[in-house]
Amino acid sequence: MNREPRREQGAVRKTWAGRVSIALIFPNTYAVGMANLGLQAVYRLLNRHDGLAAERVFRPPGGPSAPWISEESGRPLADFDLVLFSLSFEADYPGVPAALRASGIAPRAAERGGAAPLVLAGGVAAMINPEPVAPFLDAVLLGEFEAQSEVFARLAPHLANRDLSREERLHRLRADVPGTYVPALYRPRWTRDGRFAGFAPGAGIPIPVVPARADPGAGAAPATRVRSPDAAFGDMHMVELARGCGRGCRFCAAGFVYRPPRPWPAAAIRAALDARAEAGRVGLVGLEFLGRREVEEICEGLLREGISLGFSSLRADAVTPRFARLLAASGARVATLAPEAGSERLRRVLNKNLSEADLLRAADALAGAGIPNLKLYLMLGLPTETEADVRAAADLVERIREVLLAHGRRRGRLGRITVTAASFVPKAWTPFQWAAFDPGGCLARHRRLLSRLVGPIPNVRLRLDSMREARLQAVLSRGDRRLAPVLERVAGGQAFAKALSAEGLRADLYTRERSRDEPFPWEIAGHGVRRAYLLAEWDRAHREKSTPFCRPAGCSRCGACGDRPGGVRGRP
Figure 1 (cartoon, helix red, strand yellow):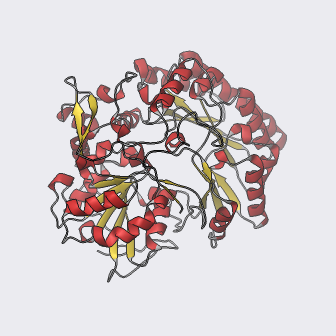
Figure 2 (cartoon, one colour):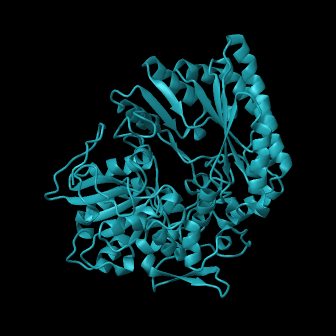
Figure 3 (tube, one colour):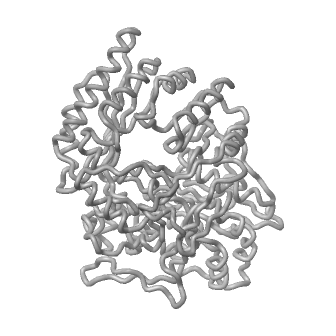
């Protein structure tokens, strides 16, 4: 099927003859997918092998029956030897059955015959909790693909051999590729009141499945390999400086499943930066684990080459006047800070160890360097949150505005503050995995209060997320396999709430506060962080106790740095 050619540089197009063809699917728009470093990395890791031809597939415009075809050759999914979903967001889960159904492939793995390609998945959302989409997948590649790609590439001809049974191919995949989870080998059990009670694995099947973990080594750090002005960040060249974060924010799953945090070597970062071709902008990802001096040296080097800089958000206590001047010198007109909560008390609950003084100093440094506009990220509906915390958030916005106002008056130009307030969604593999979504129905009240307090402030714009979408995410993020038929209905165009009701399920089964000892379906994955550590952090949150920065050397607090049974470390 032909389509208008994309405006992009760096795409890999190979003939299929003598190669294993792989459909690499990102079930979201082209713009969102092309801004995803994980997708870019997997695309590069697959196509660097001559015997593989990986082609990208994105969610098509149109209704549920719109064809899902590849960017490189325009072929449908059923033509490929292997299908590999890259899942970064729970909201993309309906795209899995939608893509398969629209391509003539049975959505349920149990209903697919030997003629259908193997359907696999990876990505951070699948690594955190694969269970809602498990019935659609033959296997999930848990962990980091850098530690799996070499073995996977060697095994690909075997996986594509349809003269072998699906069971034979999956057995070899599970035996050879670290972090492979085959859902059909694990039967979930339920209590009489409908709560998850654990898994019954087949004989000799290990539980949990230990995700593969990569040690940053030689070669280039993950970076943009295919650039397009139609991507969410335009033609910016993004580079990952470090994998994971040691801050230990209790709401952030990536901060726990990617433990221990690992910086890329300087040579690997340099190689990734050198691969930017004609890109005039560079986005740096993973600043949290690098020291101030390292970040400033990287920025100074790029500025000397005439490159402008971009960052997703800045850690307020790491914004120095020197760094702010570097950012301004690169042409930045806006910077982003993420207080997450308005009061210092609530930030201690989150382990977001920022004082109000830190935030005001950062705003002062940025505005003083000539960056007139700020974005602030907040969350509402957090554990232990009260109206006093919401009022503190409004007060913080006002104080930051006063800082910007003082600099703006001297320059004769007032900047703008954009406040984005998102609904808190409890995530698996965090200390807040026990928390309720929208505890006591506070979200609507606190949203109204924040709107009333912040709305009238001059030069401040407030953006609130969709509560409906947040509730959907809250169900899926701690969901189980019973949600698969719900996702099929949503893929067919039915509203999520109606689909849930039609399958005899209630949202509060998933959004409720969890008891301390109940098992969780996402514990099918054996991430290094111990459950006991997460529970201790949940208790510390309620005591408003902070926990120090994760420093892997000589530390055994959480368990992530220990020798994990069956764990495999690979080099990219």
